[in-house]
Amino acid sequence: MNNYYPPEPFRIKSIETVKMTTLEERKKIIEEAGYNTFLIDSKDVYIDLLTDSGTNAMSDKQWAGIMMGDEAYAGSTNFRHLEKTVQDLFGYKYLVPTHQGRGAENILSRIAIKQGQYVPGNMYFTTTRYHQEANGGIFFDIIRDEAHDATLSIPFKGDIDLSKLEKLIHDKGAENIAYVCLAVTVNLAGGQAVSMKNMRQVRELTLTHGIKVFYDATRCVENAYFIKEQEDGYSDKTIEEILLEMFSYSDGATMSGKKDGIVNIGGFLALNDEDLFTEAKELVVVFEGMPSYGGMTGRDMEAFAIGLKESVQFEYIQHRILQVRYLGDKLIAAGVPIVEPVGGHAVFLDARRFCPHLDQEEFPAQSLAANLYVESGVRTMERGIVSAGRDKSTKINHKPKLETVRITIPRRVYTYRHMDVVADAVINLHNNKHTIKGLKFVYEPKQLRFFTARFEEID
Ligand SMILES: *Cc1c(COP(=O)(O)O)cnc(C)c1O
Image 1 (cartoon, protein in one colour):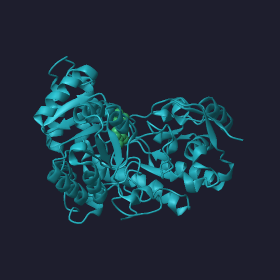
Image 2 (cartoon, protein in one colour):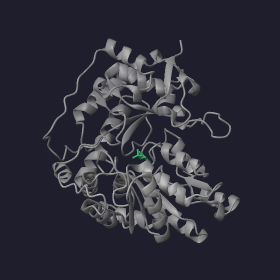
Image 3 (cartoon, rainbow, N blue to C red):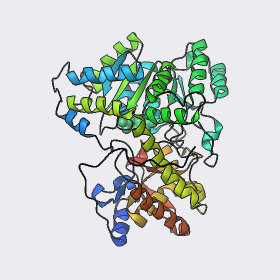
Image 4 (tube, helix red, strand yellow):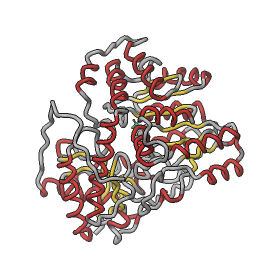
């Protein structure tokens, strides 16, 4: 790996003004938001690193595409463009557009999971697991053990542990496994990549048992960059060649266009199997819209198609990944505990080591995110025990090993100088970490509680 940080491969034509608040104002704002950064108004945020989802800056060409929206109810020209783009870049036969990633997860879970079947995956994702469980599936984590260890800096921490998958097939029987859900990259593990070798091996193993493999392709371009950078035999391949090989080891994929699609809204389910495609089309009309728009406007689909083509350009994705690494490298140099190696879309603070004085049930990552906002006006989010939720049957809190704050970088939005401001704020807070207090729930939603929960400080 290198410590080369390429300059922005773009120039700025349109800007948005941001405003700094005072410390006193932010103290009041976080209290009113129930110590949940999701509940802060955007106008009160200085640098917004809550998520890389839908927060991307579109290019001049994408904005031009917006003007080419064909808003016909059926058979939009923009749908054909998106369909062709996904076929070309991903290699799948059929496209079912959805309003965003979770719309695709809903449809896939409904058509591919039978009551009581297992859905093994390389770590869970919040909305993905919700839809799997809501449709009778049992999520089963088969990511390699190393992924749960924040301190271990090794490549391809997102890989599936083949022995865990083999054991599950052996113990439960292939007929009791709905499909393997393989995420590239693994968001909650820290944006960790999956190697091509692992994808190939998962394919070989599942084929012998007749088990299908569906990818969560949300950050597939970032994953492809890591393969090019770090896996033997891929440095001379293009991002496009790597993507096509990745998807050749799967039966289909769900994707949130709001991430690597470089748009503000959109998603899809892509499939190779004609029968599944027919079923998916029957459901998309119920939940999303006609199979030729699926909840997106024509102009959304046009911007998405153009965004996908831009996302595979080497200069774009190299800058993207290395800008994130720049922030991570600064924090590591200052002794701040983060999840290593730095992943594709975000730097994850390791709240266990950042706040060793807090118990996990006192929500250290939630509190750290709240305190970082007060310190600097920088908004981040919790990815730990609050996000993990409670077990559906026992109602006991899932207690993930990774208790993190995600500092997520939107695509093409912020500069290296913004990264410096963020790094300084985190380093300052780290020097005063003993001031961070634990939190307790005052309102706990039943589902996906992290979005709307409210807390107060424990004294
Ligand atoms: C964001 C995300 C989703 C869900 O997509 P939405 O567009 O937010 O509905 C699914 N999987 C992963 C890994 C994600 O990051």
